Image 1 (spheres, protein in one colour):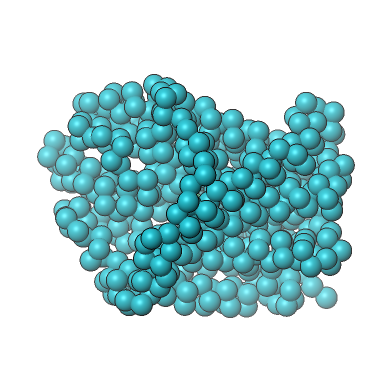
Image 2 (image 1 turned 90 degrees about the vertical axis):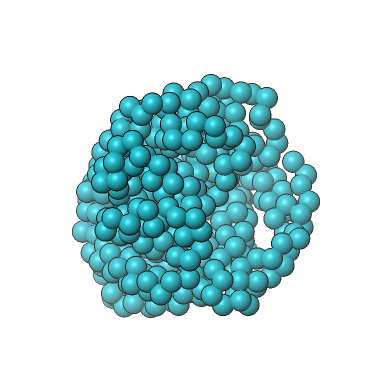
Length: 472
Ligand code: PHE
């Protein structure tokens, strides 16, 4: 007989845990840079509309499916899909995708930890030196940082839903907000910060085109942790009488606010230190911004405020990024862990050992694809470029499968579970939902234009990423 399913202890615990998952390095660097490059407030406006009108309904469907079935994604789809192969595939994808993304995210979190460690011990000049990142990724110290990150993640997850994930989120999320606000205040006091604010906040609609719109939607989708099975799993830990709708709205608002506020730190910092920055030349990759660009900002800052205060600012920045990353990592590893516990009827500890070992092995393979092992570095060649194992995981799972998973849940609600059932599920804990304008909107949108839009994003991504053809 298996133990009763664990539950979050409170609504705020659930909201903080889901927000912890949603707030990641995508919010802190990816979003602000994308906004600056793509029309500032114009991008912000489009992004906010996508969050409210496309992502939020998908989020509700994921959480609703989880709570309805009280299962992790694979079993949830199998049970409500009455064992039909197509829904089993959807369940498999919603479990396998987070597993692979966990590998990708683990590598980045380990690097952040490494940079945090180096800033703490006073090596800001080293991490900011030309070409350091390329050397850093090949160093054996990766193993030490990896062990530390695995230990922290393991300890949080071993505590389970209430004593692990919820408890950690209740400490880490407020800490994250405080660090973010401190950094924003600090950055805004620097001379020249206002140039960055201008780029960020003044709308420029001329920059909006098809690819910007596609990018904004993908960014919003990824930022809210959709399509990763996370919200199905967290939904399954939600209590029957809790209000999913309000909680989901609060998670979306928190995630978007953190992204917005992070822009008030990231862009003014860039422009205060490098006033002649051309936004078009900023990298779209969060990885290269965090590891190659930011250390330079802090080092340059040391010329005006001194090396130690600049090192403290750098430490605070990497700690912020690390907290954001670790809460996301925890949520994503919980998906395969909870699936395995359910499937094999084994303890959390045993499931964590198995999943942890698999992810560690794959992380080492992905990490060594940074120039250490040549055939992993040039593992495949498509769309005219050589791709490493790390690039492939990014292209296939992050960019391509996430919108596909979103599409599948919409189709599942429309054709199998039925929209009336979703509405009934969401009305538990929020009795007015079905008659509200938002409830009616979700009911129509999730079965009509949202899947069409997600299908278009999916097809466009496949064509651009793998065949080098852009249709939008
Ligand atoms: N929402 C996270 C971000 O913005 C993405 C993510 C969530 C990645 C969970 C992995 C796991 O960075």
